[in-house]
Image (cartoon, rainbow, N blue to C red):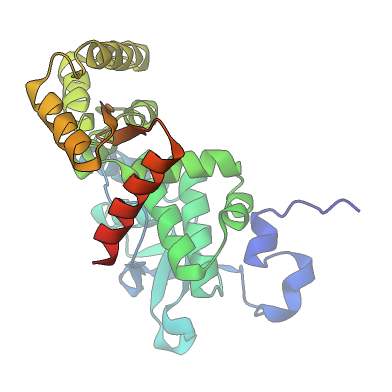
Length: 292
């Protein structure tokens, strides 16, 4: 039996199959005084371009708000006559700049989890979020509402692998995240930088910003860095410190020892023994040290 893929309507419970759990007033359009609306805490979208808001405000003065703002009663209690914006905070802020007294809204009776999903999905559909805002929005919903990545991906119409790639951007240092938020680097730049040790990421990110590297150019520079690193890696013959370390290990264990320093900071120790008796002697010395 094939399981039908869920969409946003299914997850939000706004379809006919869930009508019994929704107020008969849910989804009705009405006008509300603008000062009775307030932004929803934890909104994924953090940055609103002042110039874009002014342009939108000018449009609203001429044409009004074409698409209603989606709200829900604050605290789930309509008698308070206060409403939380689920989707459309940008339109609300522009309407305030345009000095509108009232705005068209659609009232939805959504719990916190559904409100978060509705808000995030609306922003993604309108491409109002940069990749870092999108990743933080995903992370907040996963953490606060205990969804799996698969459930969230289905809810917002994303492929699970795509969602996971977006979430991984939050592993970048905050300075690099800021570059992506400010559109100085793309999400693809960020994904490439994640392939590097974290200590190397800031330098190449700054160079990419300063020199305007494309994704392809950053890829070339990362490959060049990897080759240079292999060519300059210390060896037992050329590094006196490494040779001293190797000698100390050999004398302590009474066996031939080689040290291998990797580019990622890991060190591999290779011990070569010539007989089972020699192996047992080394094992006894190592184990007695740990037991003491």
